[in-house]
Amino acid sequence: MATQANQSNQVEQSKILAAGTTAPDFALRSAPDKTMRLSEQRGRPIILAFYPADWSPVCGDQMALYNEILPDFREYGADLLGISVDGAWCHAAFARDRRLHFPLLSDFEPKGAVSRMYGAYRTQDGFSERALFVLDRDGVVRWSYLSPVNVNPGADGILNALESLTPRSPAFSTPAQVHP
Amino acid sequence: MNMSQLVVPVNDRDHVAGSVEAPVVLVEYGDFECPHCGRAYPIVEAARRYLSDELCFVYRHFPLAEVHPHATLAAEASEAAGTQGKFWDMHHMLFEHQNALDEPYLLVYADELHLDVTRFATELAEGVHTRKVRDDFRGGVRSGVNGTPTFFINGARFDGNWADPGAFIAVLAQVAAYVHGSEPIGSDR
Image (cartoon, rainbow over all chains, first blue to last red; front, side):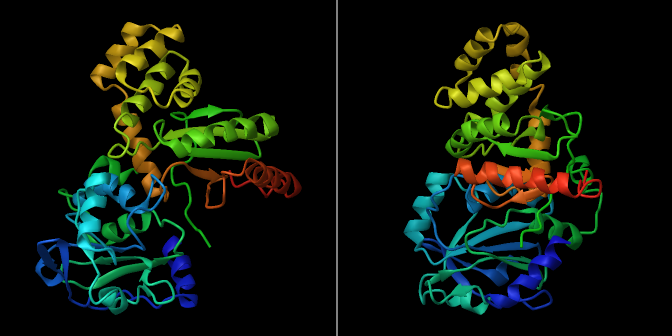
């Protein structure tokens, strides 16, 4: 319900990749000395969370929120990757400060190239949109959402997408999920 | 624009100040250690005074434990006070002492509120209220809570500016007027 309404808003803004598209592969630094390739993550659902910048001034910021919800994502077997144009050293400092337990990828050089591939780059601002993609285990986009850049989209859309992706099996159904 | 809706209706596990029949039901997802929630606290109190019976206020827990290491235990402390009928007293106490939320302080506050401190400490130690706090958090996530504080006004997430007391109270008053103007169909409860 929320998803459909939100998707209709996307027309006015960037055209992000829609459900059904195969997620373009990329390799980005996940640490100053480490590179992560998307296609190597196949086999489990992946959440790609593009966001404008590290060091957002609010304490309940999007990455901090997802950090708290990580256990719920993992119940669906899903991994979360945060992506912004910040450099790897910046990400490292930010992740340490906020005690983040998931990788932040640097879409740093060429700047914003991966964000552009996903239709999630704000050319006028020089940083990524606040855009979410849920990929299935085969690397196909199953849900995407573009949030107004100043509105943290929360995680309800992600969890609903993961739920629809993963037919409820005994391994994945906990009482808390059945009765949120 | 924003379609995030409160998926867990106000229920008897909630801490409710006012009548759930009031025209405006304000639900806050908050964190006792969050400085923004600390700033929101007197604003909510002012709104409650201003709108009086027109407003029902519900507080739910959304501790961001990784950034606020004391938040979860503080939330459980408010629940432990709640089992002794003093949830709101502890709620006020915690928001008024956000910089002193270590466990020894929680026991001091329990004592100041004339709680049975032994029972209070036992409930904290045994994690009696861990589940309630976690359930609040999960329900919040499902409703699109996107940080703290997040407010829902009559079930719809409020993405506007709560930090301006006058503007926030004006929004709540407008909702009250709207509900009064469109009764009996205006209420979505």
